[in-house]
Structures are given as C-alpha cells and as structure tokens.
Length: 175
Image (cartoon, rainbow, N blue to C red; front, side):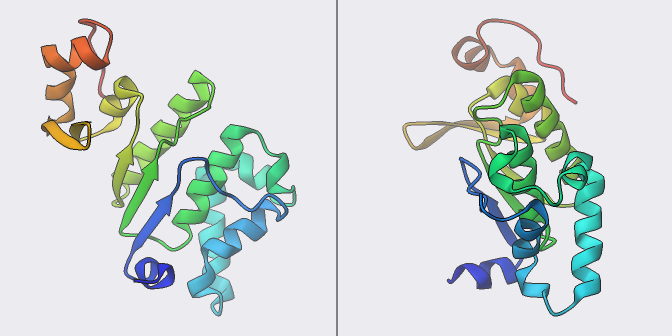
C-alpha cells in the first residue's frame, strides 16, 4: 500500500533517526503530519495545539527551523508529526537512540502517556530496561526470531532477560 493509504487506515511510523524536514519550521513539519486533514484548518490547528500541549518545548520553537533543534526536540517533533494523523497504531523505531539518558527517559515517558490515552504503540527499542519499564507486553527478538514474549513486568524479572539484556539481577520499575 502507498504510505498515505496506510496513514488513512490509522498507522503512523516514527523512523529511527527521526527523518524530520530540516529546512522547514516546527509548525511546517507538523502541518505535513496533518496532510490528510489539510482541508480542515480547524482540525489541523486543534491537533497542533494538542501536540504543543504534549511537547511544550515545540510550542516555544514553532517558528524555528527543525534542523536547528536539539536531538531530543527533533525526536519530539518526529513523534508529534506522526500524531497529527491521530493514528490508531503508532510505530516507533529506537526513539531514545542518540539522546542523553534523562531526555531518553522523558521521551519514553511521553510514549507511555500516548499509549494511556488509547493509541496502540509498537516500540522497537534497544534500551531494554527503559522499554520494559513503560511497556505492557514485550517480545525479545534475537537474530530475527522471537525468543521470549509476555507481560513486560514478568520479562523484566526473568533471569535470562536480566542476565542477557539488563546487566544482572536488578529490579526494573514499571512506570
């Protein structure tokens, strides 16, 4: 299927590396996320307002070129752009990649809030500790095969997961 058809069916994707439009402003990037609803200016503005509420930093930077944002701000923008289509399913590929630990936690906490609001989130994340802390279910994939699956909290306590992915036997708090 063509990309716009997938988006119209309720699927949005935030790729690894963000892939924002550097030479466009924050607001223009968000407008592109609302491409399918562009004829309804009021709805576009309402969706942007909700993105700005979710990510207040973007509201402060709405007229700034996206390429001049920090890595964390760019990730917020990429997620916000994907949310402009009000997806049923939001797919995120490595949203914490390249972010400072405190910013990574903040972005992943926001992802959890998005899920709590009713959007299904499919998260691919190498930071197993943080991913398990915000997830309901988890799948451990090795060499392209699912080797473990279950409730995230259960997998976080699993000895094999602890040893292989979490650096020992620490507890993982679920947010």
